[in-house]
Image (cartoon, rainbow, N blue to C red; front, top):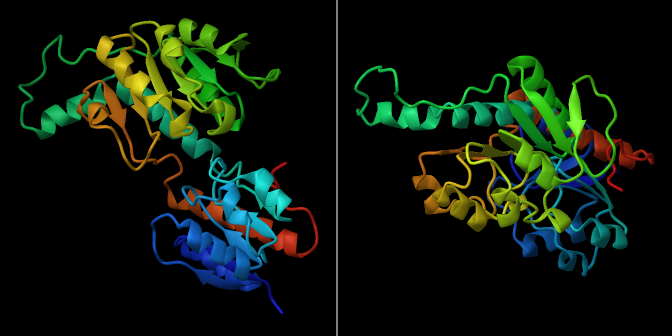
Length: 318
């Protein structure tokens, strides 16, 4: 008898077809986050579960009857899953690192460019019919060549961002990481603290997991340490920034701008951010390409397949 798995959102056809080769598959057609009630029902009825971002697997959903033995998260970030509680209920948890690296770094670099060069502001001006033609002082922004990028979190995505910034744009690289990071092919200086990086950088790009100790790791003090011409880029998780503090810093001119792909309470985005011309906003597009989303799904299915053969999944968390 084949294992039964539940997929919480519609996924690319190639992923569903691969899953159906190995499992009896039930796929939810709704694109909204699951409720805790729905999740409890899934955990009590299915051998495997493939959830994704914003499906709330908090500790209390693991209190009832549990049939599920493996959760294969669709995504590298798993701050929506209480891994310790899942493990306590006898459930193995996996994620999909690697597949998202280049696509997310591309979006981070794009946000840095768009914000530094005021691209969103310029496009809005043109679309509103208010562009009066080229002149020498129109929409002057910051040229990234030769500037310093500060990277918070030098994992796979942070390293990919460093390569793009240094080799693509001639930027100097400084970074903070909790553990020592040896040479990864980019001239870079590891600094002792987040505050050191904030103060030394023209662009700060965040590449750390959300939740836990990283919630609001960028707050008023860290923003105050930045240079007034500097910009902040976030493609990590929305809760790593104290959004209220960011809005205050932008309004006060403490920093020059921000490029955001993620938000603290998404899909809710504060009207204050939407109204700001010096902020570039994207609707969580970090991995939004068919190739990447297919690779993520296939990796999640492979985690499930390997688990049910009795081996350790390649991307088991912890």
